[in-house]
Each structure stands twice: as structure tokens, then as C-alpha cells.
Amino acid sequence: MFAPETKFIVVDDFATMRKIIKKVLGELGFKNIEEAEDGKPALEMVKAAAQNGQPFDFIISDWNMPGMQGIEFLKAVRGDASLKHLPFLMVTAEADQKNIIEAAQAGVTDYIVKPFNALTLKSKLEKVYLKVSKKAA
Amino acid sequence: MGAENLKSNHNPLTDKRLIEAFLEGVKKTFETMASTPILAEKASVTVKSETSAAVIGNIGMVSGDMRGFINICFDESTACKVYENMLGESHQSVNNEVADAVGELTNQVYGTAKATLNQMGYAFEMALPSVILGVFRSSSPGGVATLVLPFKLKDSNHRFTVEVSVLS
Image (tube, rainbow over all chains, first blue to last red; front, side):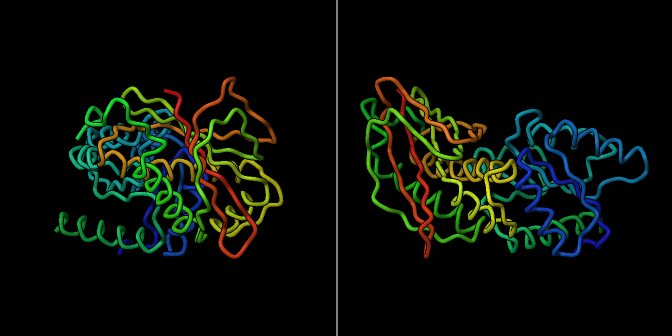
């Protein structure tokens, strides 16, 4: 599993979801968690953090947001040489097959369909960890 | 299968599959996100000209030529109870945090029902929810055809209503 000091950014336009995801991450031992309410400020935050030498290690983002949508945020991350390696977990109520395919084509690391429980988030994190470790090996 | 495969005289509010998709969407969302078992009460289709509640989660529904909206209507104590079940924090009145949770629940109910319905030939589009806060009464001159789905939180007297209205 990811180290406890792993730095997360949680992006969702609803504070409730950010709070729930932060709570689950906290229960799993992660404390280094920042948040943003839209893709645009989130992209600025991950870029700035990378430039300042304190990069994020993991992005968890909603899809359906009023400003920059999660899919555009994902494409921007994958298109930036300094960010493209970051694990990107999409957590969204968009469960249509076409959305899942679009996210996969854009390079999402994994996908959680809301509603979900703590166990689902935990198992997805483990799955992402295995994927990332395999890639790094 | 696309929306065009649905018959033009198709009335979504009497489509059993639509009713079941929303029932399942509400049940799954509340039980998973808020650990709140719920019981569905008797559904009805009516022409509504008024809606009143302490807090309403609203989301627009568009599928081809069909236009409509969903309202999830809570009284104050039910909204606060659901929030407490979701986040373990108690509030006595509907504040911004409780309202935010109502918006997110609305988003998830619609998202869950939409995924099921789009596999059946509808083509509901992605939409952003909004929350209407405060005791109010909205009215629609002439009324709007509405599917009313009442729910009760298990082992309590807390109730809320999901209203699916079709404008065209």
C-alpha cells in the first residue's frame, strides 16, 4: 500500500464528498491531504506543488464539476510532462459505459462509481498501488 | 440502443423501468453513502402545481426531446438525520453543510438512475445539481406531470420525497 506520507489532492465541487474521501483516507492512515473544488484550481495546485519540489503523489477527482470537468483535468495532467505519471483516480456518479471508456482512453488509473463505501475506496487504492508499482518495476 | 428507439408517444412517468431505476438509485445511494436503510412507500403520478420543503436537491433531466427535473424534498429534521448518518456530525438545522450533502445525494441518485436508464434506450445527459434552501413553495401554472416517490427512513418517522417531473 502507499506510504502514510503520500500526498493526496481531493477534487470535488461538493464539500460533502471531499469530507467523506478525506475521512476514509484519514482512517487508512493518510494525513497529507489537500483539496480543491474544481479542476482548474486543482491543476494550478498540482503544477505549483511540482514546481516547488513538494509534488502531489495521488489525485482523486470527481468528473462532473461546473468549471473544469474531471476529464479535462485528467487530460491536462496526462499532457504535462511533470505530472503525467501521477496516479489519477476518478470518483464519479457518471456510470455510463461511454464515460468509463472516455476516462480509460484519457489515461485514468482507476475509476470509482458513486455511491461507494470505505471498503471500495480502500480496495481501489490497493489496486492502484499494484498498478503503479508494476509500472515502476 | 439510443433514445430514438423509444416510441414517440412513450410516457416516461408510467414507464415501470424508470420508476424502478429511481427507486433503486435512491435505495443504493442512501444505503451506501449514508448507511441509511430506507423503505419505499406508495408511488403515484399526479399533476403538481406546488412543491414545498425545507431543502430541495434539484437536477435537470434531458433525454433527446424530453425535458424534466428531479426534486428530492426534505423537511429539516430528515435532512439533518441523513447528514448525521453520512458524516457522523449532528446539526439541528439545515445549514450550508447539510444543503451540500443534499446536493451530492441528488447528484448520485440521478447518476445511478441515469446509468440504468441509458442502458435501456434513454439518453439522459450529465447535469449539475442545485440546492434550494429555506422553507418555500414553488408553483407551476397549469401544473407539471410528476412521479412522486415517497420514502421513509427505516425504524423512524423521518420521510422524504423524490419527485420526477416531465415538462415535454
